[in-house]
Length: 410
Image (cartoon, rainbow, N blue to C red; front, side, top):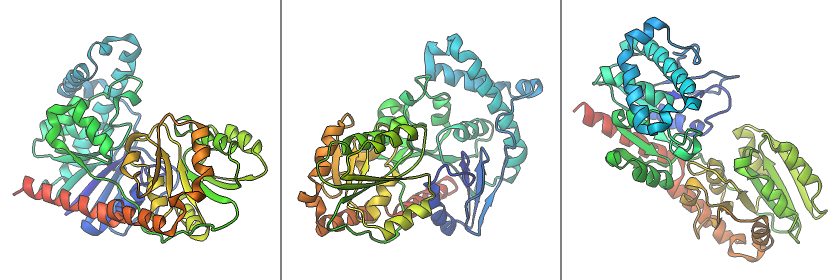
């Protein structure tokens, strides 16, 4: 059995890092895995021996020729009907018309490539099609299915491909088309599953929960004495609100050593805030680092608590999963799927609108709380093993894929 996995750029670049945990399990469960990235990037991450990379779309920004537009006029009609149902009268606003026309021309060009290069290789009884995002690839597979009814595919849904409010259009283009064609959508968080059920109830039987997971890299240990060792890992962008941690540390009364992994557009602001912190707070801004380096750091350094202050998460933040795998207590703001991992066994869930002062009080009181005990850390680790251990979550996902495939070809 082969698995064809459609990604944005993986294995190129640094994006879609969560696939680094999922792919080894997929490679063990399928005879061959073919990766189809939409975009390229610098460098290629190591891959299991039975994983192949196929760049079907040489130029993801190419647009259809007049001849292709004529040939695929039915695909254009299907996309237009979907846009009307997805967007309503917004479809006619001048600000979107040019952009949407360009997107549709791009999809027609890519559809022609799929019909020419992908479809001849497809054998329904031997191949499982898996779109990692309910986004561009899901739209293309839906268009392909319209003329190839034997084609079946599943998709994951994470964040930007799930929540309409994260799009400047206020809607997700081609959502109606995608939902009609896809066999199953696997949401990576309970919050995401609740959202799509409420937003698109007509297809509720197609939605399932399938969390991501992280690999086991061993246990961390607490500092015991001296400054509280606090860690964080996030892209330093406005939606992640990393400067909020610095503002909270400006208010703490007890010694803290803060280590942050991640870079981004707000890094100058973060450095400025870090430079103004009181002398009993020390900061180590590590900047961008690959996942292996971060895991090694957890293995070799004491960490008392991990903090995430994100305003916008789609699924269950992988950084929280990774910290929990080491048995590190968590403090996080309530955003997206974060609450899937936050409970009395793992740490403290703050309101999404929590202030720096509220965070500072939790940090100052950490060593006097139950979270500072060995028993609590063991509980964090146990919760991760039950719900977010990669071998468990991804093998369960593979079981479901194979079960679905057997039902389609039974």
